[in-house]
Length: 172
Length: 170
Image (tube, each protein chain N blue to C red):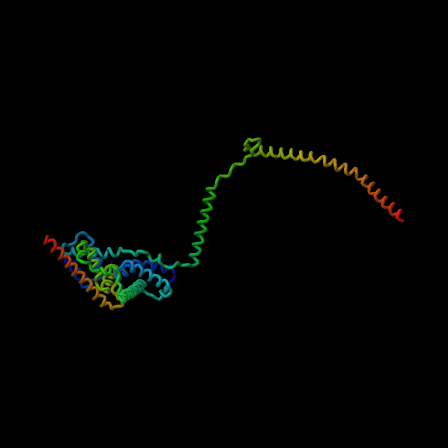
């Protein structure tokens, strides 16, 4: 793959790669670092891309593996990103988070890594199940199961939030 | 309405296709959402918002510089162009050349023909002066030529004295 092909096929994925990294790492700076690191690695190995059938899936898989390494490293060092430490909002923050969209984002961020990655690949990026299966190294059935679980959890939380808001209104 | 309900149930079970999900997103993007489904509107809004999120630094800006021959040529042309532009700007903005003129007797004369004639006249005059001043030198040369026989007499006298001396010694 020459530099022109690299530009047209890889660089156009930078936003997708960033969103995937941010979803997995739950930290904007760490996600940007991951994009940079991956881009360097891909550039060095660009000659091997000629054999790759689906560049997007291959690149997303490489990003996922890189993020998993970062997460493992953080666990080893017992050092979690700032956003991760405060991922679960305290009651005071919950009061402040009046915006439902913000609360839903937090709900997704608090899902297990695999589930939040899968739900975002499907519902944000619009990827097909086989492609997600390739990226996550799971079977298609496992992807569907994780997707369903993720959506069900979000639904339960949305309904819980809705109920809580209605109760608060009734009390007033 | 019932169809959207069913579709939403399928969605939460993870059984919808991408087209089904597209329909759901379109439905929640419109203003006419049933009140019982309203809580889910924010969920689809979030997916749309997240899709708009861009990488802070585009990937191309973090790649190592590609020092290919083409790039070097592009740089060379670019720098040459910049240099040419600077030179052209300097040439255009250079101070206008002063017009040719001559000062004759304290007056500024811009008529080139007149100035040239005046200069030639003066040069000729100077030539005459030099010629005249050299004339006495010609006179000296004439005198020198006329004195040449006298010099020969002196030389002859010296030779005669020499011969006389030699005879006396003998």
